[in-house]
Image (cartoon, rainbow, N blue to C red):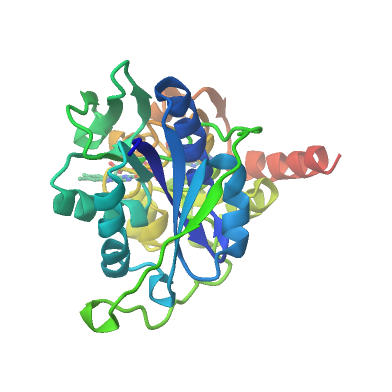
Length: 328
Ligand SMILES: Cc1cc2nc3c(=O)[nH]c(=O)nc-3n(C[C@H](O)[C@H](O)[C@H](O)COP(=O)(O)OP(=O)(O)OC[C@H]3O[C@@H](n4cnc5c(N)ncnc54)[C@H](O)[C@@H]3O)c2cc1C
């Protein structure tokens, strides 16, 4: 059987996530080099819209439909995917470095007794079809480059924005429904209820744009300024540990060594001094903009654009100007 490049298709409320289209776009490049087919692996129930959106991005869609696969649990996904992986033996299996990817991939790799590279920020395939990856180690202090020695399969989870989504992917997938029988009594986990926090935005690890404020914001009530800017930019809101420790924001918004690593296309930092613990979380952001009253703030060493100034003047002015520009 010709080996294939597989991508786990993640979806939420029926819509496929951006990271999946990024990974499929990258896989299309690899397939041009290796001649292998690209397959999206889609699990869940009520997947019509998701399937349709994936068709131009893959040669095949393996469709595993079962109510027990929605919402995600590692148990059910593992039980459904392991037989498929053993039968088809793809050469590469990629997933997002998301909570699902990071939960599922090491489990699958353990059962398949194969290697797994988490949290990759660069990927390529060499002449022999071996996957070469780059990933941060020791909280982003160094990057390791690794080459898989065997393909059984080569498994990796990949950070957002590692690949650009192709505008014209040019594929037309054949949809292959896979009968998926799961015994509910063999599943140890069951999701009983999902609760969405009010006004929830995309998680900071998945957002294209993240705007963040540190202790310079002076109090939780002033985050309204940052929320307004985020609204205009369709961005997510992040913060520093100092702010979380003050109890002004939730831990889920914390960027950095003891928080989350983000890979936004644009990261805007307001009143954030740029301590190394924070910087470790933004190392793979594409463009960094910083605003701080202290011209010697460390954040300016990492910023592509910096403004020495008062965030209380700059943020509202920026919000108004962006509103005007984006409206026109
Ligand atoms: C083990 C360990 C793990 C850690 N993990 C993390 C982590 O994951 N994430 C993290 O962020 N930190 C982490 N920290 C804490 C980190 O070292 C810093 O203390 C923290 O990042 C500082 O947060 P801050 O920039 O909001 O605050 P500050 O360092 O107090 O900086 C506030 C900034 O706001 C500026 N400012 C003040 N007023 C204004 C204004 N009106 N307009 C514009 N600028 C203004 C000031 O000039 C200053 O630069 C960790 C620390 C340790 C020891």
